[in-house]
Amino acid sequence: MNTKVALVTGASSGIGEATALKLKALGYTVYAAARRVDRMRALAGAGINILAMDVTDDASMQAGVQEIIDKSGGIDVLINNAGYGSYGAVEDVPLDEARAQFEVNVFGGVRLIQLALPHMRKRRSGTIVNITSMGGKIHTPLGAWYHGTKFALEAISDCLRLEVQPLGIHVVVIEPGGINTEWAGIAAEKLRETSSEGAYAGQANAVVKAMVSEANRKRMSPPDLIADTIGKALSARRPKTRYAVGFGAKPMIFLRRLLSDRAFDSFIRMAMGIPRKGV
Image 1 (tube, rainbow, N blue to C red):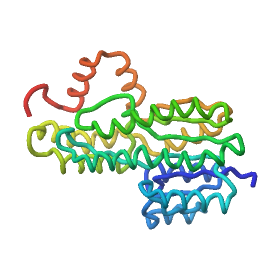
Image 2 (cartoon, helix red, strand yellow; image 1 turned 180 degrees about the vertical axis):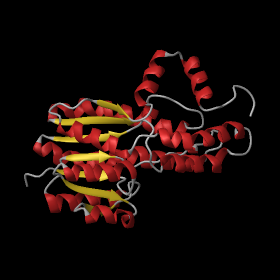
Image 3 (cartoon, rainbow, N blue to C red; image 1 turned 120 degrees about the vertical axis):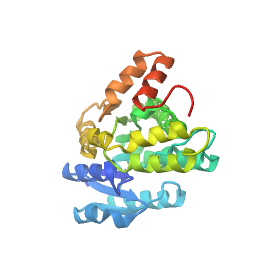
Image 4 (tube, rainbow, N blue to C red; image 1 turned 90 degrees about the vertical axis):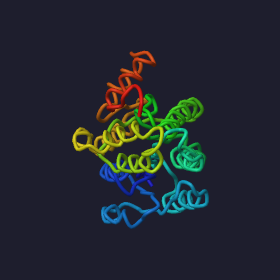
């Protein structure tokens, strides 16, 4: 029971998959969770425990955490990575889709925190790692609901850190920049579905083009960079509260602090090829 136990959500691809493999290499007993277990066969082959878990289903999360407790006695590390990007104009996005975005990106992770904390408190140790985004510090057009979830998770993480620090529990925020995963393709497809026609078509088409361009893909950082950063944070005696890593993360967050609201708006429009007026 000396081996530390980690739960990684959204582990079927991208950052979650890379993180599960990294923590396994560091000697953790790893539980990789996702809805589609068929996509985690390679992780199972690497000796990682596979969990079918839907972060929008409370019973699924309770069952998954209980399975870890029954098999391994506790949870030392929770990596809240499950999430997706849903883009579209505020006027166009159905509220059901907006709620779904918050269910996956915010409430699912918070519920797992609630389930894991009693076990961490008993040991007076543990680390909660919330994967937010540089999008939790900046804003882009047509991404209001996605950015809203990431801003929310940033705030929740800060409040949580104050609450659990006296109990010996760390809270770490990882703020990825551009990472070469399925995220951009999914966000672009959502944007096409909601706003590729009508009043916001010009903006939407420009943003889609920027998201899926080959030049943009080549600039993206590999998921392993985030996994290595998580490994670094978990290995530190006193981890940082935040790690901004990946393409564009540090400079974009710096620019947001440096520029006025309107100056940053202009910069983002220019960077994404969006005209100031018209569609």
